[in-house]
Amino acid sequence: MKRLWSSSGCVAISRIVRRGIRQKRPVPEPSPSAANAPVEWLKESTTYADTHSAVVDPYTKSPYPDEDIEELLRKGEAQSSKSSAYKKWVAERHKKRKIFQLNFDHIPIEEQIVALFPGQGAQHVGMGSKLSECPEACRVYDEASEILGYDIKKLCLEGPKSKLDQTIYCQPAVFVSSMAALELAKSTKNSFMDRVTDTAGFSVGEYAALVLAGVISFQDALRLVNTRAKLMHECNQRIASGMVTVRVSAASRLDEAMADARELASEKGEEPICEIANFLFCGVKVVGASNTCLKFLEDNQERYAFQVQLRSFFSIRSSF
Image 1 (spheres, one colour):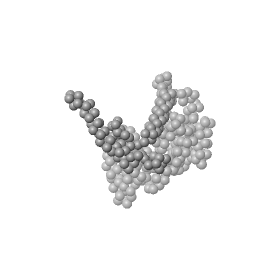
Image 2 (cartoon, one colour):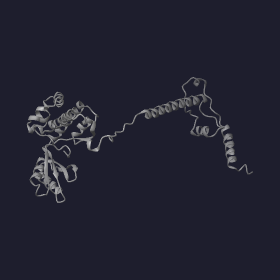
Image 3 (cartoon, rainbow, N blue to C red):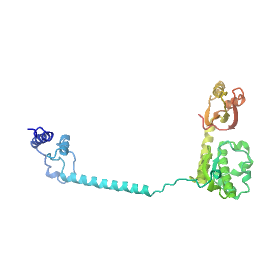
Image 4 (cartoon, rainbow, N blue to C red):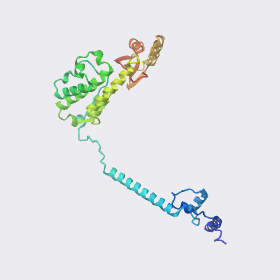
């Protein structure tokens, strides 16, 4: 009696009872016409209970043909084998892949070079004049002129300033001049590239840093910069606007000044946009605004205790 009421005994009795019930239900036989027909996985007489019992009860006959189940299992094993082989191949490939780590410990810290490239706002008529005697730098200007379709070197050296300050010309000019200056540094300092450990750029200067790092070519970078400049120029044509670099202190009331500038623009029926476009570093911010608002900031900088240091004739980083 103890064995009868054990857990294993209960399971055995349950199976016997279910087996007896199952044996009373006839298993449907396929018709002769369906012998060569495509496999129909779910018959009308097949229920979920039949399928579930076939899995959990070893005494119950499966509602599916044995050969079909065997074929399905074979396909599953083959697929699993392929998947395992692929995973093994991927693992081996990762093992063979070399991980390169930059190590500049062999370069004394005082000899290491960090190459930084400027962005829009650094342009001035005559930039590149010190590069004219460097053949490598001149080739950079010549190649850039062919890609851009105009004489970029002449624009940098002679201006006019009104044209050089336009975004569509300014960004390619700053980028190309940076690349020309890099060629001058390479030619005059034999170990220059061997001592460059880091590089970075501000705004459009990021593209120059990418070229130096070997991420993209000079030609591709110039085409990207040119397209970027055209799109930004088109955006800026929608409304007369610009940007100013502002130095602030604890006593500055820049937020109040921007609010007053927006109010003035609204009174004139213009777009009341005057906002922080960039936080350069501690104490220095960039404001993007309409020309009316920019003029208000420039004329009232002493009143609100801040200093306007640099103006750019575009405001792509603001709501414009």
